[in-house]
Amino acid sequence: MTNPIAEPFVEVPDTDATSDLVTLAATVEGAVTVTMNRPEKKNAFDAELIGALREKFETLRDQEAVRVVFVQGAGGTFSAGADLQWMRDAVDFTEDDNRDDAMRMAVMLKHLYDIPALTVALVEGGAFGGGVGLAAACDMTIAVKGARFAFSEVKLGLVAATISPYVVAAIGSRRARRLFSTGEVFDAEQAQAFGLVDELVESADELAAAKARIAAGMLACAPGAVGASKALVAHIIGRHLDQALMEHTAKLIAARRVSDEGQAGVRAFLDGQKPPWAE
Image 1 (tube, rainbow, N blue to C red):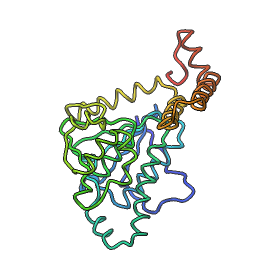
Image 2 (image 1 turned 180 degrees about the vertical axis):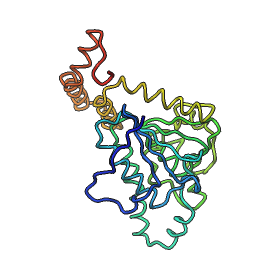
Image 3 (image 1 turned 180 degrees about the horizontal axis):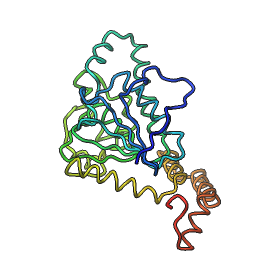
Image 4 (image 1 turned 45 degrees about the vertical axis):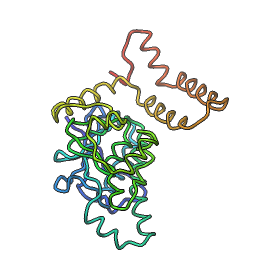
């Protein structure tokens, strides 16, 4: 049974997002699937697709009922990266035009990164350039073994700029220097070794099964605690373990212990019952 989430309520609607290039569906339990729906172009990015993704991610960032968000591509390919016509148009852009264009991609990725629920990329076929960045901006990635990956920007005289914060966080600076500099194509097994992929499956059917397993598993996790956990990780990245950080973490767990979720979860555990969010 599905329960499509209503169209976004945003202060300034994005005119680039008024299309069916991105579909969104949710189960009654709060498992949401965001699908890039441009299979004839292998879900390559252009301004319209980026705008549609941005609006969907902005909506999901503010939906308390969402427990997990899956991001996938239609037609057996996650994303081929930049659309060729979009690239042709950008050749004639001014530097200011290109900066504005790149910022739309950066904002879209940040909205994805800021979703409080667990986010999971489901990769089939291939993820190239910005497609890899989209997967890296998710909390985890599951890939079919035949999938291929590459940061091919350097072969076009470009750099993997807007996606770099998420990729470097996933794979580390040394490996990012290699992959950004060589533009080499690597397979799903290598992607897992690099830290871009968390789990490998043999087929699309197994990918669907993994999706169902994760959706069911997230029902046991308190949605507020999941969002707080993700925010905690973002806060401590790069921080020194000093008095201020220790105080921050102590205050956080203290606040969670007296929160409605924390009280309900601990009491349910002690009483041998299910917490309210798992019923």
